[in-house]
Image (cartoon, rainbow, N blue to C red; front, side, top):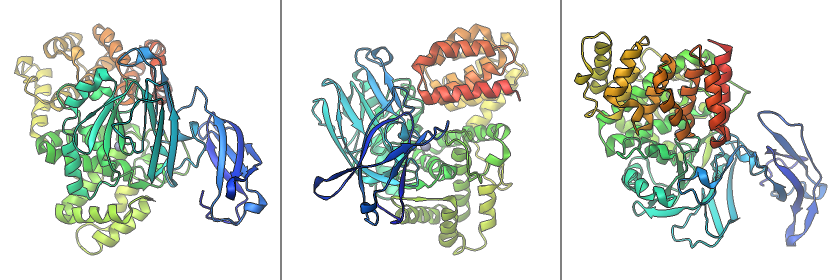
Length: 565
Ligand SMILES: [Zn+2]
């Protein structure tokens, strides 16, 4: 550790469910000095502080080296240990981490805040037939030996520390890109993510050099709690993206874009999360526009916008600003998707105001200026003011920017995304519900998944059981392989208590452990007035296959449903 305050007498490290065995300071010439330390009282959210006394003879040194011997718990909130039956191959166990937001402390004692960056080296020993990968220098040619060495020379925040071990194999996607997964998913992954190298090349052209070496993907078993996690050099992905038609690859564009926004320039606290997620959602849409086309991206923008409007109805107003003024709480507390979608709209608003060319210049300068640094919202606003607002007076004022940052909802002049295809999908939904059109007029097989999702989301709330049955049989909704279409459908099924589809819904709830796919369905079921008990029993049955983070989200959505509207 670098010593920033030479008068400091204590070092505080975050831990959770970690058993510390010893702490020693390492001096010059391999000398060691046993340290006095204690574990603080345990906090339900933050865990237990490891408080280490700095010995008198070390005080004043510019740097200290500490060796901590410790053991993690089987309950470590970052780690999921999967038995063979929960993997694609069914023969080998697997383990993977998810450190964001504050779970790194459950496998490494450290200062677990995005404000602090670290480099690392690691030696990982595994059963000889398994492969270990980390958010570090993975070499695709590494022989399977049961002992793997890693080096991560670029400083990263603790939430990007990542590891996975399993029966993993590699296939290249391009010169700089490739994918790791179990052999059973390798061909499907290579097909689904074939555009990754193009995305990589376009991203470098648009946003400046990729500063991390290789960019690989890791496709995990279904229990992975998120769509993707932007672990540097190695994005972790849910297999629910393997739709077979490349329709869900915006998640890859998103995780890749984090190599600039988030991993390179990092939010200093989780309250500033829009600097990571809003900026990344914006960059993602820019990449998708170039690789695919604007219509597809407009469809995704509309769906995001609809989701955002839904969030404004459930997220308390004091949490609706991009950078709400909070100084406590759980970093995992959902603020819905406000950081993502409102943040993306804000950056679109800046682009519309200043023009793409000038805004892109600003972005290049921003990534350069703050590379490998962590910043707060206020630092961003000052920089924006200095580089873009003040030099171009009469476009957007600082006060207008501050409304986005600190006020709930959306400003009146916020851009509103639109898509002709999605508009016509919404019209068809309304027309069908009124009996004006038939389902045969719905061109579902020519639509994008996004259009079908919008059609489902646009249906009125009071559909009769026969109507739901017609929808299901005509459009094959319960049978879809597209996880996002299924999500929209089963939210409707749970909300409307359409019992004939409950068996399929339960299969869906058992297929993936991705929180985005599960939480709203469990939430709708628990809140429909009749099925709270059923929701809990379905959850109890599936629970052992879910990641601890997903379990936490589902338990919270049950608590909210019980508390009532
Ligand atoms: Zn993200």
